[in-house]
Length: 340
Ligand code: DAH
Image 1: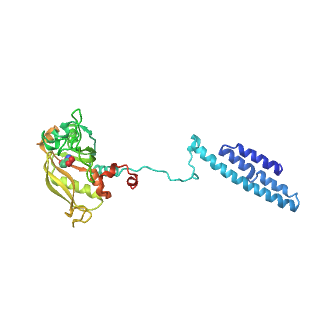
Image 2 (image 1 turned 45 degrees about the vertical axis):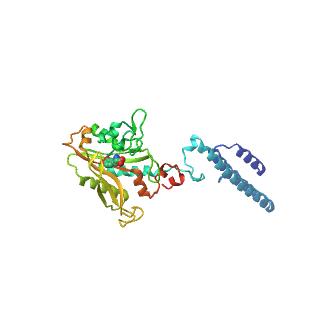
Image 3 (image 1 turned 90 degrees about the vertical axis):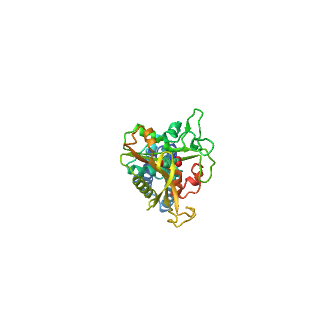
């Protein structure tokens, strides 16, 4: 084959190539060690110096040109192949590394999962309760009698009532008696989930937020156990030493009831704007389960005791990630979400 013929053939063949396997044989045929172009050089010997030089230059240029074309075609073929079944099975590390947008978990999800992980390590099971509740589970069973302000839809109680008489649960406590009835003690559960309150939103109030409820029922349970579980949980959650205090409070479903405060982690109790100069931050509500609630759970309060606690996941997420407005969680604001 002379040079003109070779050039012609090569160009025609190249045009028809559609697979990388064909491209490889093409490369071998022309540019390979025993390829046509090499063979051309062996003919060159018979030419004059002048002709040798001229042809050599031309052939070299042609070879370089051909290599470029092959490389270009290869990229194109690979791109097409990756789109098809055959090609997508192999990973092409030479493809462009344009950044691919990945999704982010909402900090509330991250916080909930972290809480679940810690409670599971402490022997609690993670369980679920319905968001649409009947009044009995959300109120009556929890020793919240009719006429109690917490039941009032428009004033203090902030309850969303549905037309069929059910409510959107205002607290995850509503699942307490469900599990008491369904399980045989000892019971150790946490119930994370969404709760609803009819109220004006601001930086620290949402009509829709998340709580995690804890319930432990056993024979010999004391406030000291409650305090220990909460302190260990908070230390693991905040990854630091934590000091807590129980302040007497009132919840209809616990007796005694407590508000649990944590020594402010920003100022270590000295008093700063984060703790409103008090040195303490309110974290959650808790107490020893009221005998009436145990009865409503179809257990014998003479035999079984327990403690319960409930905290807002949103609030703990705000503390952990230093977020100053609860409304950001549901804002869909990508600038906010991309940080997590
Ligand atoms: N359900 C209460 C609330 O929504 C929080 C709470 C307080 C839960 C005391 C408890 C508890 O289990 O013992 O504010």
